[in-house]
Amino acid sequence: MIDYNILSKAQLNEALIVQKRTGNRLSSIVIDLQFISENAWVQLLEKKLGLPRIELSDYCVENDTAYILPFHIVEQNRIFPFKLNQNNVAIATSEPLNILIIDEIKLITGKEVEIWLATPGEIDREIKRFFDIKEVVEKEVQLISKESVTNIIDNKNSDQNLNFENEAPAIKIIDTVIKLAIDQEASDIHFEPTSSDMLVRFRVDGMMRQITCFPKHTQELLISRIKIMTNMDITVKRLPQDGRCEFTSQEQNIDLRASALPTIFGEKIVIRLLYKEKIIFPLDKLGFKDKELSQYKAMLADSSGMILVTGPTGCGKTTTLYSSLSWINSPEKNIITVEDPVEYQLPGVNQVEMNEKAGLTFAIGLRSILRQDPDIIMIGEIRDLETARIAVRSSLTGHLVFSTLHTSNSIGALSRLIDMGIPMYLLNSSIKGILSQRLVRKICNHCKELYQPSFQELNFYEAHANHISYLPNFFRGRGCRICNGTGYQGRKAVFELLVVDNQIKKEIAKGVTKLDDLNFASVWDCLTLVNNALQDVNSGITTLEEVIRITSFQESLKVRK
Image (cartoon, rainbow, N blue to C red; front, side):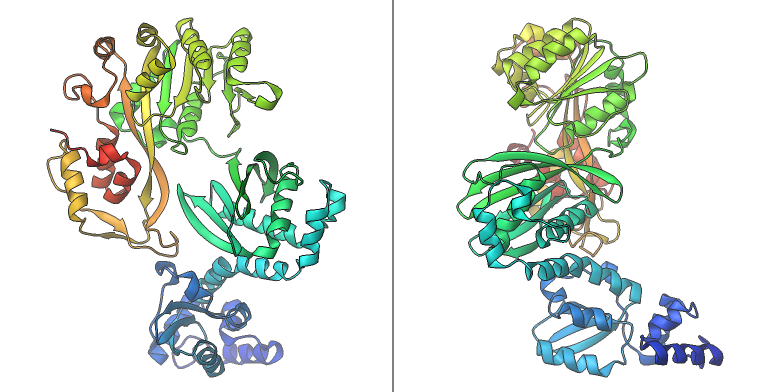
């Protein structure tokens, strides 16, 4: 280090004295003393030893690879296994001259060891990412004896009978799982019993991701812990149950909504995480194209009528509605919502949460709201004829009404309401516009690369991109640590906006309620959901594969003439 002008002789002597006293690694000491940066230390080793360097953030590490070595070996020696094949295991380290640990790795794995250089910070992040939950689970599971599980099965629904203390293993395990889900911005946690263990999976960016698994003998105890947290009856195991509670992590309050379902291997629990204090995005940040945004804002400026947002569960309809309400909210307006559940808290908005057990349904809530002198009403979902009738009538009597429907496209919302029993003439008079939407995953910027789409993907593109005159460059994510190997990070909305103007009303009056029956060029002067999504493909925001995934089967295969 002196020869390379990295350290002075005095600094090296000071570091060696500290090492003799503490036994710590030399790399940690010189970095902690701020004699050298992490990056400079690795560059020094790279020059001196001729070893290759790995950027762990750019590498997608499989679970089987990360866990090939025990945690105590990885932690004590600050090493991380990142690549594995039949004969070799690649290890990232910032202390490559530790010969003893190399021999120990050979003994444990039975493989030859490849040494790669990485900064201590990178190694620490990977160890934390892979081993934090694994270590908590392994440590606490050892404290859960089969006798304690037997006691849980025999006990009644009482916190005292269960004798849970602050440091009880089940509490620590469940809390760790929930905190990890919050860190990964998961929307749901799944506890899934199998014949041999219990899987834990998160839904992140709309896709399921396996996190860990618990031994089978811990299943009853952990399920009981969740049921107690969410105020369910732990003695009821053969019937579905719902529960809820509030969870605080890093000063963030999260609503947990739990659902228990009996399966052949035991109760399956799903916990929905509702981030009540989540930032509501402005309308212009949701993903609208300029023309759509202008048209949608014009609808919001009306004082009456109905605006519907459609799409499958989890496509961001509630976020769009909340952003819409935030945009039009003012002290001069009385806004009331009827929701099941209230997902986010909106300042200045009166939010009512449904409680069907207590008899508070959408229809009953709506009738009460109309006596509260509202200007604007938001209905979480139109589920039945009675709710639909009240919503339509409210929109015809001087109220601006927002709601959602589960349909695959904009025009399909009209068919759904007609099927429910709403007369077509009332729909023509009440509906201002219908917004259909999906969420597409965005390509991870850390591993974004050009690629050649498959023959099927190109066929899909050419069939639907008739508004685009050139073949663009196509991008995808190759998968890295940042995106957990998925190639995607985050999501954005794509929209299909049907403005119900006089021309559209004429088509509806003719009985046109199917997507293909409309003449898009002359009648519907806008882009379809697929067309809008393909514009995001052209811009390098998402992939063709993702657009095909989020569109319906019929739309994906359909070729417009």
